[in-house]
Image 1 (cartoon, rainbow, N blue to C red):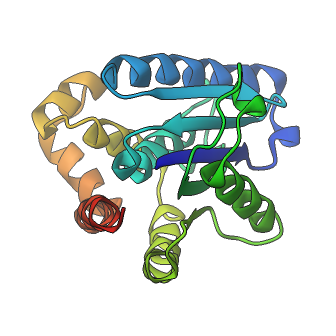
Image 2 (cartoon, rainbow, N blue to C red; image 1 turned 180 degrees about the vertical axis):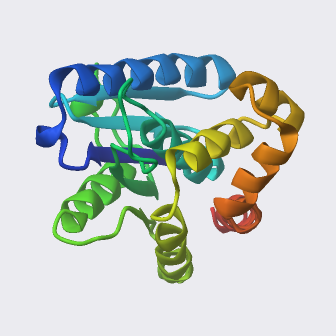
Length: 217
């Protein structure tokens, strides 16, 4: 069993060329970091069509955390003269967990249940407001996380760029003091953003996802 993440940037045709380039550079850099972090487990991401990306994750239990890491990365990308506090970019992400039947030279040539679940789920999301969904062979798991991820969508829709920035570093396992030093703000400011982004609920959901997927397959 593996996880496949397939994602599309939302309304990317409205992004300036320089802004889109900044997002893609950030993603490519993050993909390299993920490969280093998961050196013992296969993980591979690539950008396609200019505004979409796909990744294979052998440690499928971590797929939701990685998806949120990539979403928060995209949400925190800023423009120099930006006035709005809200994210300027967003993304729709579909996670598929299933079998890996064929590995080609590229992800476009690879196939299997996980690829089909992820790709078809993202296609179904194009005409709806949902930003993150999960599809697995187990309907009980799908039902549980359809509701949970719908609630997560509501929480994430309220993120500011500042909140997304803090979520990104929290997902990397950093402490408040470490984040405060990186962002050049006080620890109390980090704590306020942590509460504003719904981190406590998110961390509980991530633990449940890891446990449920590990026990199901």
